[in-house]
Amino acid sequence: MNQKVNFSRKLKRKFKTTSPTFIIIFFILMLYVIFLGYLVAWGIITSLKDVGEFNDNVLGLAKHPTFKNFGTIFRNFYVQVNINGSLKTIFIENMIVNTLLYAVGGAFIMTFVPCMVAYAVTRFKFKFNALIKGIVIVTMILPIIGSAPSEISLLRTLGLYDSIIGNWIQKFHFLGMYFLVFCASYEVIPKDFAEAAYMDGASELKLLTRAIFPMIRPIFTTILLMNFITLWNDYQTPLLYLPSHPTLAYGVFELSRTTINELNNVPARTAGCVILLIPILIIFISFRKRIMGNITLGGVKE
Image 1 (cartoon, one colour):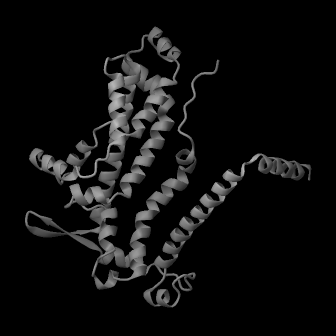
Image 2 (tube, rainbow, N blue to C red):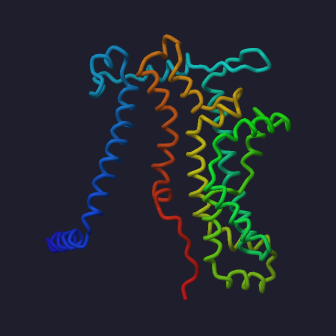
Image 3 (tube, helix red, strand yellow):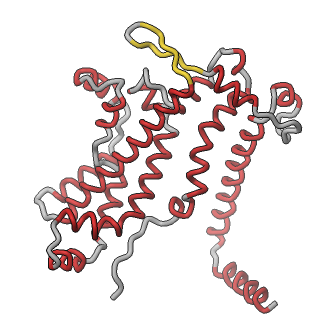
């Protein structure tokens, strides 16, 4: 009873010290979250309806849930791509393989490269360290819309266009916000760690792998997960740079305008969206604390 009273008092004090602006923003964001949650729930419920039940009950719960829409997707869904002048049919199983290659490999590269470059910039004193950080900030400010034609032309010339490996090579850069996050993480690590490692005879590689990297591993993992989620949902990049290697997101985009009779209905199309959603939902539930947590790093306590 006393715990309930104390909690009620703390809650009242909290609301008294909270500004009206904070309360308004809180309720606006709460409505936004509820709206997004409702759309996700509606999509899952719709994927469990047949066409007749959906037409009779668009917004309600599924009275007779069925998974036949998912079977229809795996049996009938495909994307036709043009390879050397001939059409090739890519089924959903191949799309899943392409998605794993694109998302897993790309996410690791997009995390590992900024991590290593940020370590070199913050650990060693070069004349151009400030210039490198300045270039990263400038590229984040300047718009890059309209550069795709020149990129495609260059990739064709280098023989890297329409290739998973070529797309991985495209991602070997350190530009972006995560480079600055890694820099900030390295900068707060006390120099005592490096000095102690050197006294024990550790090389620079051992210092990085056994002392520094274990401390930034939570940040590395968080950024890796965020990059994976971004690439998993990306359909524009495969559409432009990997036309003969359609990913699952690319396939869902094509599904939205397909004319195949079995798939030309809302329940089947939402089933395709749910298939794309399930891995991300599992990852978010499993790592929600890490993804939603602050990207922070603590050193030693004095």
